[in-house]
Length: 331
Image 1 (cartoon, rainbow, N blue to C red):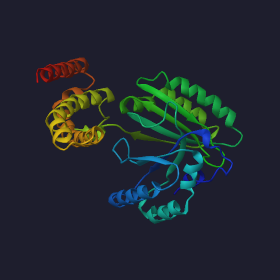
Image 2 (image 1 turned 120 degrees about the vertical axis):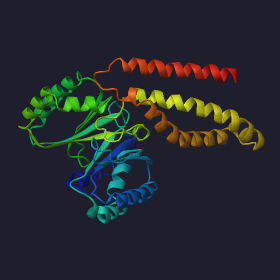
Image 3 (image 1 turned 180 degrees about the vertical axis):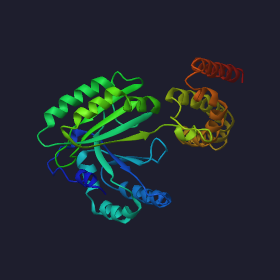
Image 4 (image 1 turned 60 degrees about the vertical axis):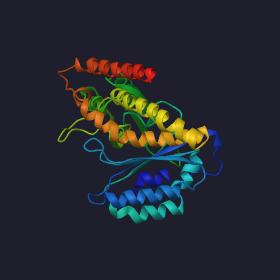
């Protein structure tokens, strides 16, 4: 791992309070071309190892989604900073990292983010920005950070912001997380003259600066048309189409299988039948949502010159909601 990653692995000491709350380890890794399958298997095995560590809560893996996100982004959530750093500094993790190092390219980012505030991943699209500040220039950097935070809050599509100062002995960089509703809006802010001018001012008190984009959500269910470039559809449109497919699947599964078969014939407890229904719904949606997204591609990605399509498509989806409710009331 990189020097930044190893810095994040240093323990804060035995006296740390457990009352700080949950934290998330955000790891961003770039894998060499042709080594993706090897890394995927390695990450799956690593997930089984970290699951046995005290304080582990959950793990989320976001594979690359070129051209916007070229890194693997792994989120590992722990009950406390002490337990998270115990994993980062463990012999098990260090041994596994050494084994996969030949498949990695460039430097990794490993950061700890305290949970429970705005700006924490995941979101429709986020950027994790890591900055190394020159010694003695921290006050200047804080004043500059306040100015750029005010500027980005006025950017179109801005949804939230999180700023994390260094944690002595755990994280040496200053960390910022920006949240936007679409990748288009995020890239628009990144390329804006106001931001570029502010970044130029920061050269006087920063040693190192880099940003990486993280995409999450239902994007795997909304594939881009062949040869298409650009951002994923807005999150609100994705959510509307997911509900459009989720409602009939859940209703019909309960009507045909959940009630008469699982609860009736099999005499299953409601909790077990509900779990089976949820699993079945997700599996069915993984087929239905890509299918319906292709039929609604005219609405999901209409282009800037067809603004009228946005409300028209939303009205059509709402009308389909109403038609299904009326049909199911009749049944």
